[in-house]
Amino acid sequence: MKKNPFYLKEIPVDAPFCDREKELADLISYAKSNINVVLFSPRRYGKTSLTKRVQNSLKSDGNLTAYCDLFGVTSVEEIAGRIARSIYAVTHKNQGMFQKAIGFITSFRPVLSPSPEGGISVSVQTAFKTDGLKILEDTMESLEKFIIDVALPVHVAFDEFQEIAEVHNSIGIEGILRQYIQKIQCSFFFIGSRRRILLDIFNDRKRPFFQSSLNYELKPLPHKDMVLFITSEFKSAGKYINEDDASKICQLVSNHPYYMQKFCFFLYEEIDKEVTQKDIAEIKAIVVESERVVFESILQGLRTKQINILSALAKEPTAKIYSASYMARHNLGSTGGIQQGLSTLSKKDLIEKDYRTGTWSVVDPIFVCWLIQMSL
Ligand SMILES: Nc1ncnc2c1ncn2[C@@H]1O[C@H](COP(=O)(O)OP(=O)(O)OP(=O)(O)O)[C@@H](O)[C@H]1O
Ligand SMILES: [Mg+2]
Image (tube, rainbow, N blue to C red):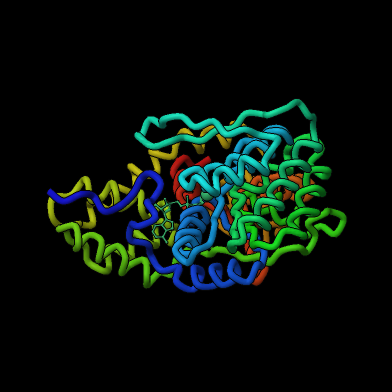
């Protein structure tokens, strides 16, 4: 039997990828022109996988590419450590370059150890005791010196960049990062899905990163390309789905890349040879159920009034949330309460407003299915 061509886990960089040709070309071209980019979208639209492909292409053109994941950072020391680690991770296979990195990055020493997957895992330990912002400043200064010395085009991706805004003294941290990023001759990508927090870092005139980078939004995949991707992946792996059914899946997941992969992964496992309508209904229920724990924990962090708004927007997206009939239909209470609820829910990126039509809706398409199903 052939291997399931869809992915539940992170998609490998050489696996078939749907569309994103223009985005790939744009981002490679920005990177080569030393332009800094804020790459944003709702969760799991493919920012990380696209960035890895951008870096792969840059690497094959002789660039040095560092990938620094800031997910879960809790202190300035940790941010500095992750930056140092990303440089060691990309240089450790090249003796000459690794020695250079060690020479410049005096605040952190690399620690190489065998990884469970059989490769080498790179971590860092502090070389000497400095506290707070000074260690970040030292690390950024060494990054600058290293990049000058290495004399190659360099690309640095900061994934989950918005996390720095949650760390103590975040404005101080932003100030130092901005100061060096402005000086260093390379391209930086700042990637994140908490769009409100991320964009505030770059679009608030009182903050250090104000207007320092180009905003680049990743949209859902185009419907036509997604249909073609699904039908051809099924075919190449020895099973069959017709275009109408593939199109139905795209609609169910609102052209969301991750949910498309998940849906099709389960579907491919389930069927013998050919997809039927009944299979699609069954898999929809499985996909919704697979996210239940996540959705329940989201609701646990919300107040009843906020849940009411979320549920109303899942059932009926609207540009007229304050109309008396909408408020009454969904039991939304006072105008002030709605205003506050909309603000909290959009800060959490659970809902969004389409600025063209003014329509409020729930961001995650499977969350929508679950909320409707629960009739909360
Ligand atoms: N263009 C694409 N073609 C096929 N699958 C894709 C594509 N883009 C994303 N995916 C699927 O979606 C998954 C999630 O993508 P990825 O982790 O890159 O998203 P993300 O935007 O970085 O998510 P997060 O916001 O959670 O960090 C991938 O592992 C892959 O299975
Ligand atoms: Mg990501």
